[in-house]
Length: 110
Image (cartoon, rainbow, N blue to C red; front, side, top):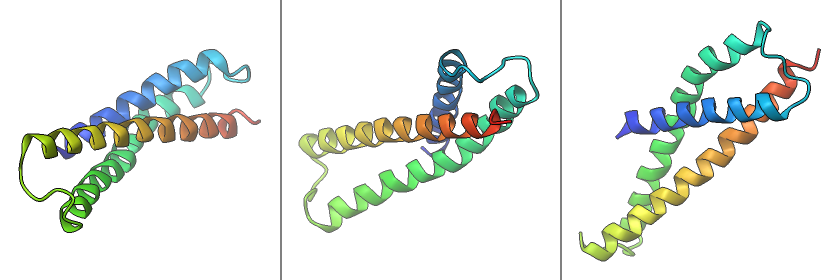
């Protein structure tokens, strides 16, 4: 499960980068920052955001079970945990986008 979180984070990083390179006026495709952003950033984002996401999902599941909100492995509990996981993935994608935008603005601030 942890590898899927890292893969998702790396893919969101790449997609956010493609969007930001098209939207941000100060970015230049032919520069030393581009391979650093895409190659190094992809692995760092996968490791950092993937592990954070994995810990958040496990922590949320543990909290729901500890609070006795989810008491048995029923179909309803499974749906609730799946929806919670999707919400966390969406929040992760937004966080990655804003981190990528901030990094690009700092990198091309020269």
